[in-house]
Amino acid sequence: MLIVQKYGGTSVGSIERIKAVAERVVSTIRQGNQVVVVVSAMSGETDKLIGLAKSVSSNPSDREMDVLLSSGERVTTALTAMAIASLGQRSIALTGRQAGIMTDNLHTKAKIEKISPEKIKKSLFEGYCVVLAGFQGITESGDVTTLGRGGSDLSAVAIAAAIKADVCEIYTDVDGVYTADPNIVPNARKLDRVTFEEMLEMASLGAKVLQTRSVEFAIKHNMPIIVRSSFNNNPGTLVTKEDKDMERVVVSGVAYDKNQAKLTVMKVPDKPGIAAKLFSAIAGANINVDVIVQNVSSDGSSADISFTVPKADCNKALQFAEQAAKDLGAKGVAIRDDLAKISIVGVGMRTHSGVAAEMFDALAKHGVNILAISTSEIKISCLIEAKYTELAVRVLHEHFKLDLAN
Ligand code: ASP
Ligand code: MG
Image (cartoon, rainbow, N blue to C red; front, side):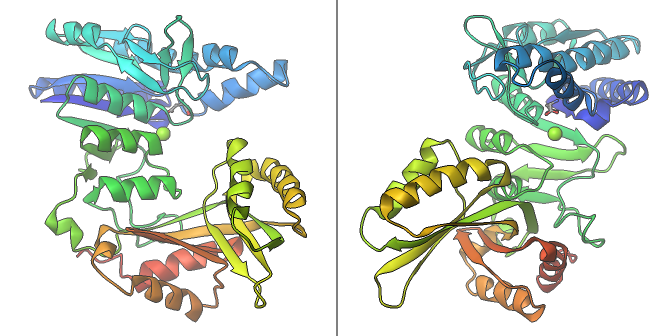
């Protein structure tokens, strides 16, 4: 088999860990596989580099940030290749540039545009284990770029698709994808399989095992992913295309995100075009709006429009919303940043009714008030007070019996 193995920060977090990675890679090769390794920087390294940049400049340029940040992965790539070679396996370290990873020029959050995998393929053919630096690429004009935090997952999936690997293994410090955060729910269960769509929802709803963009990429290229631990030999979670068996599961997991702020534009005149004006102002500021609720007053003359944004964007969103409120003749903007979004995800929701009612009922029984709701085909999210997050996760996990395999 042709396998891409990606090792995250904790998996290469020390010399001992790097040696352990080398052992695993070499044993995979000795079982008759070809392996391309993608590594993250050592854990904490990227944050450390960001700290260094801030200590010399309050506003470092994104281009220089990328030159700096890409150095973390360069270190682990070389060390991992050396450790593999010292076990008697030919090995070659490649930076993003050397691996042919071309991106656009949006520094610090670049998108992969094209991969020219000739050098990777040639090295594999010659019997080398190829060790690639994750999280980085290069623009057409030769500048180094990085792919956004957690971007090594994306590097791994993109490389796997480019060389038509059989599978992309993502090694981390947990055993796979869980029904809920095991730190909150002690009897959370590791899932053997999860569909691409469920994984995408879970990742974007706050589950941290996989970067959201990497899952989008996997869907597009139908690249199966296995999330597993580099600290043991447990089989992990397979992220893959849906099949009949998987559809039977109504709820697969509970996710939460404490990083939500809610803005309410009060007493907006209720007439056509108002929401369009408000949200195009927010979108123009490059802020992602999530849950939206509109309440029209009983006499129908005005409405309150509430929406959520990531906490990090809330001051910027407030500025734009206040301006829009003025322009639209609204009364003003109120803000709350003590909220969390709690979600249940499962492909079986498409064919089962009444799941939403059950969720609301379970929360109500424990006195958790719901401030807003949003749904998609395979998820239901409720906005609640952040202080109830842990309670709500446990209640929903228990209500839907997620600790039991189905
Ligand atoms: N080192 C980068 C980060 O910490 C990329 C990654 O680990 O995936 O975000
Ligand atoms: Mg990661």
